[in-house]
Length: 603
Image (tube, rainbow, N blue to C red; front, side, top):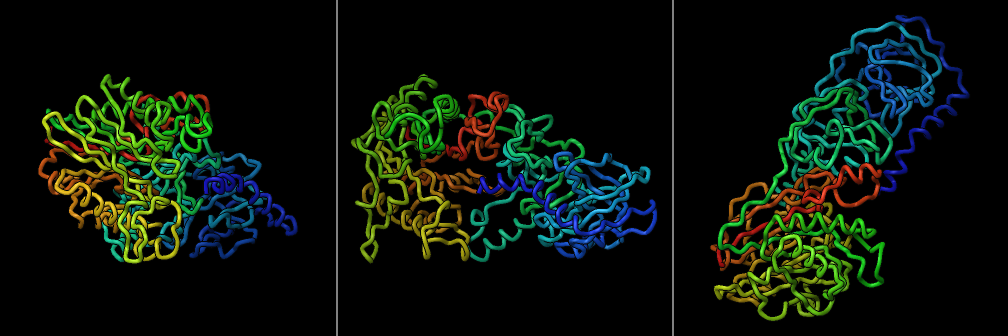
């Protein structure tokens, strides 16, 4: 998908050449004197998504509202026809930058009407003349949410303003210089609504509650990212939840979204500032944390060396990744870490989990070790793991593993837990100094990223995504396994369950006698992940009834999901200056999931 996006960024040149070739067989209209009869922009734009005059040459007159060199063109707007259903603005594509215009200049020109990926524009510019200067029209305020997804078509090409909108996505900020804005914060539908009609209604509301602020460039990996002003850096970040104070500029349609190119420097308010540190651990409590470590591969696995199958692609990147992770983990100050997405290369001194544990020990000055099953956990490239302070807890026996071999069978005799899709779950019974015990189970269910086939995926009816049945069966197996093997004990299950709060796998776990720690503690609007401009919870800590009364703290440390991926460890797609200016060995964007932190009163 990203490679397609990359190729599409080159297409404006192709479109212009095509338009010129089309125009060569027709005689362009001569430009008449300023003020004489001309085609109105509203006639060109029409009431539909495409122009009724597509392919025709037209002569029009209007004021230049914006010059966007990165788009090789400028925007024109005329006095309008008074019809709110038709736009009074249009983009003029001037491939060779053949005319010299500036904002406020009134011009008359002849060009050919065309559609470039559903954005109406003029190209094959033949003749033009300057008709003096005039004041710019007042920008039209865009109000979100829209009534329908087509509402902005009537403003395409016009000068618009945005005010008080909330940043909802910064995923492509570094790559493409774009920010998704909305009225308030959007949620993943199945995070807040039951699968089916309720979730569909949320999805429908989300679809009309978004607009993009864009740098206007077709260049990917721009050398300077201008949001937030003066430019993005490790210290000058833009986070999901921040607020756009004001911006204005022309509206256009590109890459299936409506976008505004600001003509003045937009200002943001840091209404979702970074949390400098997680909550302080209560005295004499046991802190357990869940952390997806985003493909921590150390290059010492099967085959050895770099590049690895995932994660860091060289030693320098590995050091940057490791330093960010341990900076976050040391500040969390947990006694036990449940980790996901760590390289599945065993438990030797050269393994990824051993290296991460050693780095955490050096950073924190504490004594750390890890649960070892002696053999690799399943066949996936990534696995789960448990790191713990051995001066606080001790392992009571060997760890337990849930996989396809020891899971409950369904009525057809098939394993409920499929370890060819889910990563095997790992459990460890821990002894505390006061004689109490607790069982910690770390899990990583199948993702939504690839299909599991008909009957398993829930992409149309309920909105729970690919492999919903696989995850639901795994949840059932997990509940039955822990109930059988750890009956009467304190049990906490943590990890990346790849299911949002209202989805079937979570419901199965809750019906099986477990409570989400966030619900026990009354935490509102929990989230650990941002996907396509919507917040949701994929990472959980579930406690059984025996442990629920001893739960005294729950929090998510929002150091990752709200931050631009550009601030992560990877050097890919970055200039030498960006590799320096966007990186710090701090917790921020150490992963793509936020860590979950739980405090238990059992020490």
